[in-house]
Length: 129
Image (cartoon, rainbow, N blue to C red; front, side, top):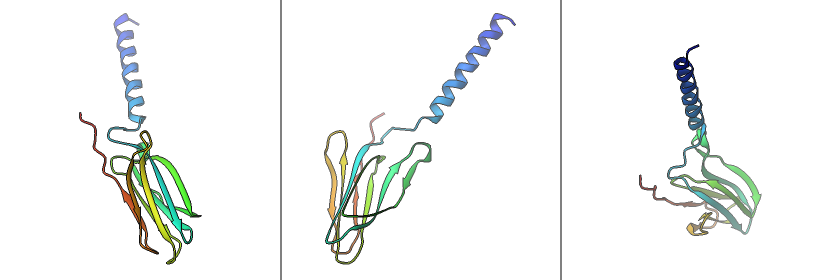
């Protein structure tokens, strides 16, 4: 095998490896590391529905049953993090909060009317290119 064929084969291998590594890496442009918080008064939280970005799966809203009066998670909230908190009954008040995990800044905080779902959302600026 000549040196030029070996060089060409090695170059192709490096290119394929580099492409496969970048194709599998999650996109991070404009995404945020946030903390979602939920609480309730007068009863428990029935469910929460946080918006998250999950690598190659993209944006997801995965409802989760809670049955407690407090809930918290850290997630990649993308450029528009959202959280919906549903109270267990008409006598329960639900609340939510979205925080920037790095700075602790509160991006949105809402308390719903009695028996109604609370909805928090934040629109984050995308970084300049």
